[in-house]
Amino acid sequence: MKDALFYDAIVIGAGAAGLMCAAVASHGGKRVALIDHSEKIAEKIRISGGGRCNFTNREVGYENMVGENPRFARYALTEYTPKHFIDLVKRHRIAFHEKHKGQLFCDDSAEDIIEMLLAECAQGGVQWFRPCKVDSVLKRGEHYQVNLEAAQALQTPHLVIATGGLSIPKIGATDFGYRIARQFDLPVVATRPALVPLTFDAQQWQTFAGLSGLSLPVQARAIGEKNSTVFNEDLLFTHRGLSGPAILQISSFWQAGQAIELDLSGGQALDTELTQSKLGNKQQFATVLGQYLPKRLVEGWLAAEGLDTLAAQKYADTPDKTIKALAQGLMRWQLQPTGSEGYKKAEVTRGGVDTRHLCQKSMQSKVHSGLYFIGEVVDITGWLGGYNFQWAWASAHAAGKAISSSPPSAA
Image (tube, rainbow, N blue to C red; front, side, top):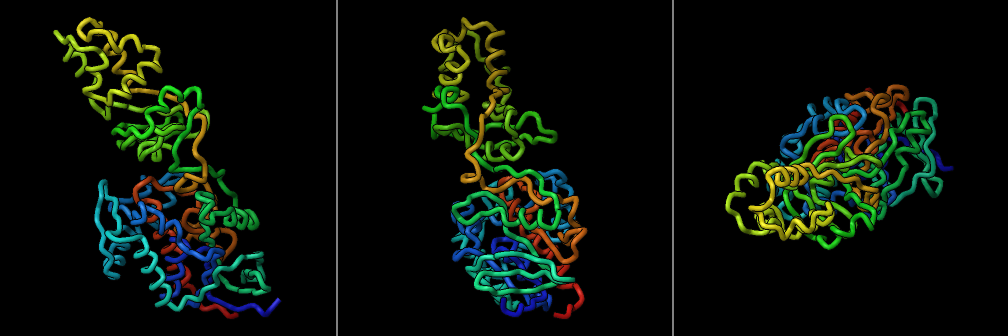
């Protein structure tokens, strides 16, 4: 083993959080090393937002986070707000726009955000080890030793784990961060795919498989978990189940064995409207419902409920009680997914390093001084819409500032 190279801080993982943390710490005068195992860094930034990176949301708070204790994120998100990151984007003259609900995207390419972060790291003199595999991490007195392939060793008093979660393994996701946490006796909250399409039993879904590609606005929520939020978003039917923003949002709350509830009317008072439109209406029942919902969906839903014979019935001949019951069914459609598309399609990972064992002001372990966990590896998961990136920036900033303000350490 060669003599270890000393750095004031070492960051493992050159994704959104890792790049940000390395830049912040280096701007505070610290000598920083950044390690990543991939040839192409920041792939999640590169592919996000259809290649334009939904880099933040104008309104972000701990209320937009999911985890065992979402309030843990409050300090970091307050100290480093969307405005701070927007100001950074503006300083680098990156053009951006707002789509809806405060979601901000690059006008041109996600590459602009990556180049911005690389420039910030270069300005601070961050030194790179890439592509480079970490063989082991050890504690040597007050320092951490990171042993790399080819018998290279680095030492530091400040080690930051920014290796993300398990989502999208094809771009390099691993469980490295969780293994390091467990090595140092930090509990890890059970992980599962989040912001992910939900799937159903093939036979159960047969009626709706033909609706693949159909999209409509709905209200959606997961049933069973406390504090499950109702989301007003678009729903997308797929061959295997349901997707679209509405489903991605509630997938972070959904757990196996639970049901979800959809208001297919998107919040309309469908029961009242349908009853009021009945008088003298000689159209078929499915035709009338088709004025409020896609006709293909109406026919599929009636068939799935065993009410397909009702579709051809004259609307005026349908009892009010039946109309109201059907409207309520459409407004409170409950169904139970059998699974999800898994980590391969999940945008993020729910769960991670238990926040009870981290300091919310610095992201540092409460037991192991100088050991930090930031970004997706922590048990904080944001909603769809730029919230996860803002958590990456904010948690990275918290750790970076704590490192940059620490007293000098001797090698």
